[in-house]
Amino acid sequence: MALFWRHGYEPTSLAHLKDAMGGISAASLYAAFGSKEALYREAIELYMASIGKEIRKALEDPELDPIEAVERALRSAAREQTRGTQPRGCMVVLSATNCSPENEHIQAAMKAERRRTRLAFRDCLLRAVQSGALDPETDVDSMSAFFSTLLNGISIQARDGASRDELNETIDLALVNLKLRMAA
Image (cartoon, rainbow, N blue to C red; front, side):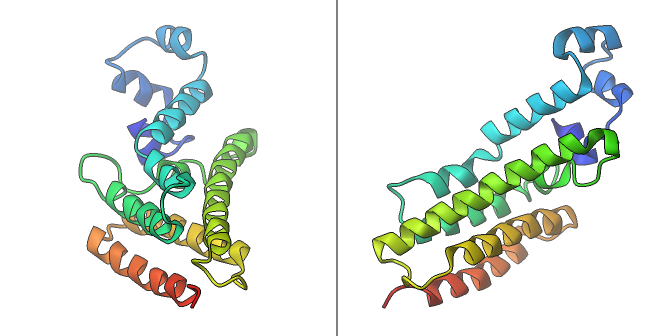
């Protein structure tokens, strides 16, 4: 997972993967996973079930105040994506942004994952409108695009070396925008 996360799908070679797995043979790797793509998909599943789970968990929790859920999702991203024990940034955002034509389906799969997160923001914001926490005139589609864009930007900034504090300051500014739309 860390190799795909750090280097991306295409740049991670079979040799890198074999070395990371203790020098196993190509035949053993293919016997265990079937293909590099199947291994990548398993790595994405592991990422989403571990490091990436907190974002959607917060956004999809019907018991959590929606405004708090948005904040928790963003702060979780800043925390997870700046840990010193793993690659920086988000694997879903960074591992397959540019692919050759034969791997465009990998790029499309990550685009679909990012879309699911944007829709989770949308559904959370819609709950906020329905509960009266946000002004009924709030454009939840535009606001969910805004927070999704911020989330993707957090990933790039984290990869570029931004500190958790710097990312949290940016999140603070975004939350001011959200709180301005809170119902009176």
